[in-house]
Length: 173
Image (cartoon, rainbow, N blue to C red; front, side, top):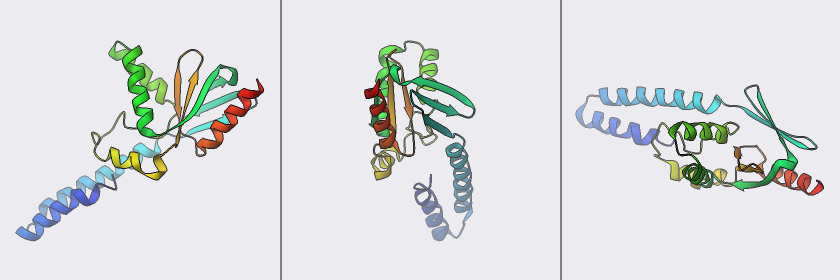
């Protein structure tokens, strides 16, 4: 949202400067403020915690806990947002025929991910390619695949360390 503010406000300021009527700039300013509040609330509403114990990976989201035994994890890979989005779309197309099943799988896949990868967006994809190319967006997610064919997308602070730790623990078992 912050990246789009100049593009939203500039037309209103130009129109106001040329006509002397700044009503459009005020309306666009209000729209921008509402957008900032919505984006802030949406970005901050989800807090996930990932705990790697000796033989389990514990995922916690707003009090909901899920425990994944290390022996059931087949793979943990670093992945960027675009790849996470594409993996999900391919997984859905191959395995979810109904709309209800797609919604259930999306909630399952994204439950413990606090990063918006673009599956639900209020901007309809505007600016997504810019965000996907940012250095902070590269390899900031971890895709955890399970033996039963299910996948989880998680967003730890130290993604590389988590992948390495899971790999070391899998090697032990």
